[in-house]
Length: 122
Image (cartoon, rainbow, N blue to C red; front, side, top):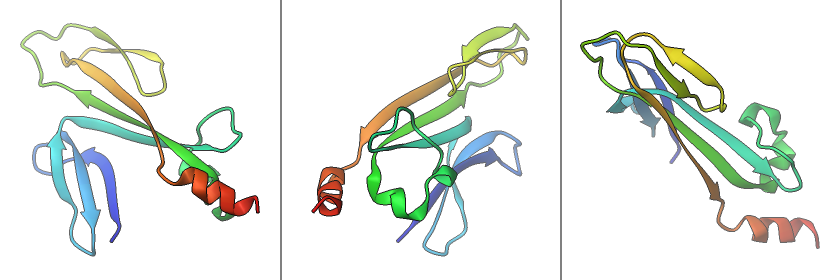
C-alpha cells in the first residue's frame, strides 16, 4: 500500500489543506490550514538534504534520514496586520493578510538504513 501526502487549496472553501491519497482511492483532506509540506532526503555522505527528484534510483538505498517541514497558517484575524514569519527554507517573509504562519520541522532517521548500507559494502 502506498500513500501520497500533499498540500493544496480545497476546492470548496479555498483554504489550503493536507491531503492523503492512496490505495487507488480518491484523495481525502486531513487537516485544514496546511500551506506547504516539504520532504527532503539525506543520503549517506551528503552535506545537505535533497528533494526526491535529485536522487537517482540506485541511490535510494543510501537515504538514511528525512527532513519534514509542515508550514501552517491560522485563521484570519479581524485586523490585517503584517506579520513576519520564517518559512520551511529558513527565509524570513511577511504576510499582510492578517494570518499567523509557522513552520514545524523535524528530521527523522530511517529505520534499518544502516542495515541497507551494510549490504552494499559487503
